Amino acid sequence: MLLAKDDTKASESDTVPDEDGRWSELLRPDYLATTVALCLGVALFAFNEFFVATALPTAVEEIGGATILSWAVTLYLVFAILGGACAATLKARFGARTTLITAALIFVVGTIIATAAGSMPQVLAGRVFQGFGEGIIAAICYALIPELFPPRLVPKVFGAEAIVWATAAFGGPLVSGFLTEYWSWRAAFAVNIPATVIFVALVLIIVPPRNAPSIEKAGPIPLLRLAVVGTGILLISLSNTANSFPLMAAALATALTILWAAVATDRRAEHSILPAGAFALTKPLGTGLWVVLLMPLAQASGSVYLIYGLQHVWNFSPTAAGFSAALMAISWSTAAILVASLRSHDLRVKLIPVGPALLSLGLAGLMIAFAIDEFRLVFPSQIAVGTGFGLSWGTLSQLMMDVSPRGERDKTSAFLPTLQSAGYAIGAAICGLTANLRGFDENADIATMHGALFTVFVVACVISTASLYLGLRTVRLAAKSPQRGRGGSTVEVFAAD
Image 1 (tube, one colour):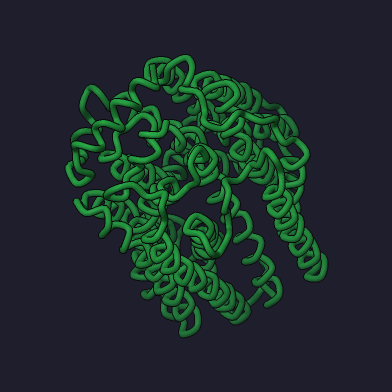
Image 2: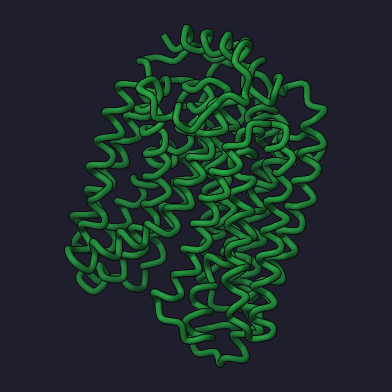
């Protein structure tokens, strides 16, 4: 059934130019349920972390467990990355429909456990199930975009997904805070259940019982490599809790070494987790995946420390400090809509390096703000950061699929949200290491905070500058890539499938 649909899209891509796609088409009966389902699948992942992070402090007042509070985020992130890493293999082995429904059930089980928890260890058990299930869901939702939409609409769908991520950054804490304050922290946890029920119903409607056979035979699930990757991510998270700088540095260095070794081993494996050419500096897929990793890694500096700095350095109220996050999210959404509305695919691709360039500009503005003690620089800087992500993120995601080796599109698309999460995790650890090195802690004086946060944003600027170089290189290499179809669409892939 899906094979016939793909054949139709392959034919359509030969007759309908990529430039003809319109936002209104996503709301047509043919695509409305599909659009809602895929956006909802990603939204469950994007919003859930913010829901729980906002509600947990209130939960601790009732059930205790403040000393292991950070593990609720850590375990969710680790298992989400593991779920995303094995999503492509599960999709190839069992089909998208079965995998999505099973993952949704795992997520609901975890949500029920966390919602009904009477102690923090029970919450942590629920978070493990939530993370694994939602990691799979988000990854497969990305993989289904080019399968369920014609090439001319793919940019619009990626633009919609980018808007989901941006909205979650602002709307997640707002919704969770409202539910927690006026109802219960358990309500903030439980809101995922009806959303997941709707998602499963839509999956039953839009995804056939079995996808078209994969070009590549599904291999065994690489449990050992997944365990190694999980250990590396867990060590990254643990490095933030170390009591001394040497211990923190050692944990982070060990974690990065483990992850690098896992990537190197995966390249030689018969059944790899990563697509061929991942992180290779001579291939557009390789350099593009570096950009997907490094942009969130650099932006983690603002996610972790900016609101804290506004409140403790410049005495902003929580609401006023949160306005900076709202600016970033609104700018991201607006830019994503504008760039996805451009008729020329080539122009969208050329704009990819503008994303990391604006990110670098925004982070430089934050660095200067703390250097000269000028909080007014924060707001235009946040607008630059959000605009940078909005201009590049959707097109970059689509380009990674376009330049993927034949038969490995699922691996690439499933890897995108996983890599984004890993970037935030690594970035948070590097920022924590940098801040602690400069004497940052809850008892630090204002001068120490200024110095620590200034240094954090200096490091973030260096990282974002590297993503700018790699973004420029990605565009140059992609122009020469034989995988790209006419107009940047996945014409050749669909025709082959």
